[in-house]
Amino acid sequence: MSVTQAASATATLTDASSYVSGGTITYTATVSALTGSGTPSGTVKVSDGTNLDVCTVTLVAGTGTCTFSEPVGNYTLTGTYSGDGQFTGSTRTPST
Image (tube, rainbow, N blue to C red):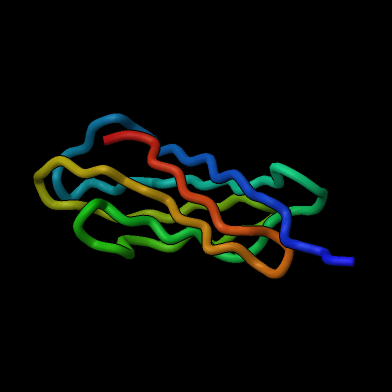
């Protein structure tokens, strides 16, 4: 018999669609089970298209937030969940 990790899904959002340089951006990530049961744990790394780790979301009961700021520019924020012992990793790009 083989037992494998369950698939996960990552959902993300930010607290606004535009920001002023130096303002705080709040990024929320929720990771859930696509198959199986249980709640994914661990972290979601947030990248902005240039920097691979602008903030790290620590999941508590499958969800969490982090805050950061960016200089003037356009960014594509991506949340990447690396998985844990029960769940595979997943990625989500919410908006630019």
